[in-house]
Image (cartoon, rainbow over all chains, first blue to last red; front, side):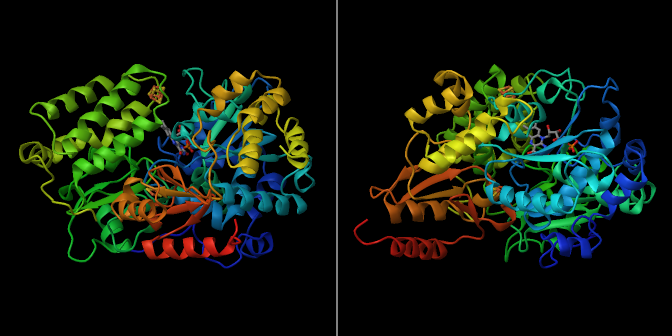
Length: 426
Length: 160
Ligand SMILES: Cc1cc2nc3c(=O)[nH]c(=O)nc-3n(C[C@H](O)[C@H](O)[C@H](O)COP(=O)(O)O)c2cc1C
Ligand code: SF4
Ligand code: FES
């Protein structure tokens, strides 16, 4: 099953991070076309027609999101979410580090489309090298007139400002990100108002993921209608999937949505299980979504099919666990993460993740008690749908599904007072 | 902060549509210079921004990349995310703790190395992943780690 490389078409071209090489491969033609031949409205219309959906996790249609900006003459901002901190996800990282101009071109074209003069790229603090790569690329783009006060002589001003976060998963959530970008604690904001009406500095703001904004470049190149023919009607285009965990050939793979199954992605593209192992579960959309057992591996990779299978496409971070990976240890590891990353603002999330972590810890240590599994399930119920922001639901995604699907493995830890897999870690 | 960074910090005050956005970039300057955020510098930053030190404190304490204690010359951050864990992150950490004689999140007595267990650093396909002074080290093994430590130790003059 082949990849369909559109965003990753030139990812391995040597020197593609330099503007002359990028231009030799057709780079900045989409921006040129947008700014010189099209109105902002017609660029936005192409994106609407393309049926592109947000690649950051929630899958909201990008053209519709842009259309929510009020037409009231206030300053508008575009913010690119390059926080990429959903465990299991590393696609934005590869794109930024290897092909920074693709992102810059997508950001500039999108800023033009929505009528924003200032765009910001918010990078997670760990992407310090990526920051330097983008900084150089923006300087190159400025020298060629692709960003700056008068883009390509069109009279339009488009500035791109980089911002480095400082280590906090919650800053990937768009309103927390906006607070962080304003120099504050990265606490989520109450919605509504949504960023489209009151975002950065209280102004109308669009927040989009790196991959979403990069996709605007091929959309303008081939036209929205042509792009929409890729994938299916509701899941158009290609998507980057990061496959990690216990497979032979982990990596980022770009496939047409709806045309490839999870099994093909993991067994063919990512090489399947390690020598002598068997895959026992796959978390398909980053560490926040329900896990799938082997009977579900033939699900097509698209938003609807994964939802029908009881999980989510999410960020496209596909985490593979095999028969040597303990489900208790794995869910404990995730819960430690969510407990640590809970911003502490609301009680169900702050206290709930703490208790879940503690109970899982004692089960993993062989000190589980009868009733612990029921307690875990109860704690999940008390978090689900009751938290201020979606991190609460994210925290229980794998655990809640895992408790049902791998019940015996959890029970065995309690009954035997140890891990039935023994001390196998890898 | 040294004069050069202070000048940069002053520039940052004007670099965003609103001044408040300068706080985190300025704190990065401090962290870069000292390897952590010393108490006195909190006051300097507060002064620059026109905030109280307590407010600056409340913001910086939210972010894990701002350290409240000195870190070593090399900040070694070992990813313990799930994708790395199932590919040997635990062995890697154990190796480092034993080799350097530190606990999780500790600094060697000579101030050379700080080891930290951190959450997913977006390098999951190259697990187990390590970050040293915010540079990525993909597909790490105890052997590669050992080679790095040896090289780092050699680069330091013997009386240091
Ligand atoms: C806890 C949490 C973490 C998130 N982390 C990220 C992230 O790292 N990157 C990202 O693009 N979106 C992340 N999101 C989704 C954003 O809130 C937002 O939906 C997204 O940036 C919108 O862009 P899109 O429409 O292009 O997908 C996160 C959401 C939540 C609730
Ligand atoms: S759900 Fe968690 S992360 Fe979100 S606001 Fe509440 S405490 Fe903070
Ligand atoms: S889990 Fe280690 S880099 Fe993502």
